[in-house]
Image (cartoon, rainbow, N blue to C red; front, side, top):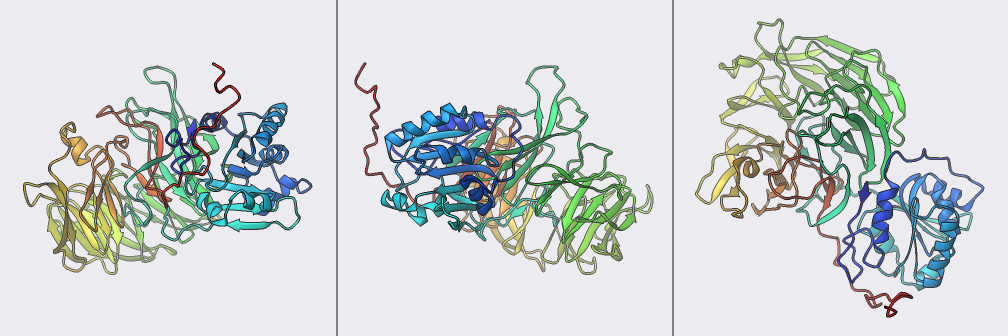
Length: 603
């Protein structure tokens, strides 16, 4: 199931997918996205709808037919590709006529919804719709439709086709804002730094869309990434409190509206009680037009088409990896015993590197390897009892660049340190202290005591958890200078929070892996945002992340939260996408909010 929030009763508003008076769309959209969608069909060039879809270059998602008239073109659009089509028209007469035609075609509710709407302010949230069709632009313009309004509701990468009956329609395309960012790896990118460059992510003010299941299974999904406007994650389907054998699927959704794109079974996944799928936790990666995944432990890595889920490439030249990194067209496949690099497009083995690592860290709290400056950084041993070394090899050739014994800067280390991330010329490791190592030669730049918990590289500093400096702060984040490790900045989490919030784990975010953007740290289990510019703490109680997983995924201008089974406090459940305040306040329409139907006043 997937749905988008309706606005407040009694007025049309941009906060939801469709406003009051057209609430059926929420239910219809939910029905339309249950199960695996039909395979996208090639557009039929002989039909107007086929030419529209081909010209737009969009074959799936949510489509809006503005000025749907009798509904014939609306129905034809639903038969092209895999769309849920919402037809709107300012005329009640035409709406009723279109509904009769849709029902006669047997498509009512499954693929199509028809509503009466004012064209001056389209009843959709910002960045929501994949395809807009205006087959009579002159009539729509007389009804108040503007190009700015079309651009507002179009999702990045979406298109609007104006003058659909003609052979050369006008096409409006919406480019993805430069301020948006993806989350292509378990820890954002191949550098391991869990900081999104998305400048549009801000404190949540709206629920953009939600999807099932409503409840998770103790830990979060085995992976969740997003790239090019698509969200990919591994879903466990099993009724709670039953002995039914669970099933696992790799699911792809439209990142902006939650529309189900495809759903692929994950074969023979083993499950341990109380844990999520026993899959390599770092094996799900998205890049360009592909998503890379290990379908089952022991099987080779596969590249799937991001649009359909079909297998495009199986990487048989390398063994099944425990974690995967993608950078500059190279896939780095990691195991504790060796590292293989293959060409992402051809699958050709580029190089391999033998190593031993007796103790690896959890992928959510540390990185098995990181990439930066064209190098792969990782830890290794020459034997089971040998000291651990930090090493760097060339990404393209695998040639060793340098290696350093970790005891040279961490004498008390008994094994591997937590390799956290690469950031601006530094490889950052964490043990009982924070160690900043030069990416160029492996020499220690500086170290600082403490550093427990999550760390980030953002705004030109290394940020680490720090003790409170006053009674008014619960704990703080210290910004450390890249060259010296000296504290240059500090942002504190306030000590006084609402009295009904109890428990150290809820307050300090010990259940989840905290993430960040360049402007905010998403902190505490409640998914609150700490503004790194002003120090303002935006406290929320709307939801939380699943245990032992990302607190949230900040990307595409949204905050994604995944199903959980925790009962720390009442919260919204399911797969959720939160958005900040709308780009512009909604303006009341000229028409009265009460829409009187034929039955009004008869009872």
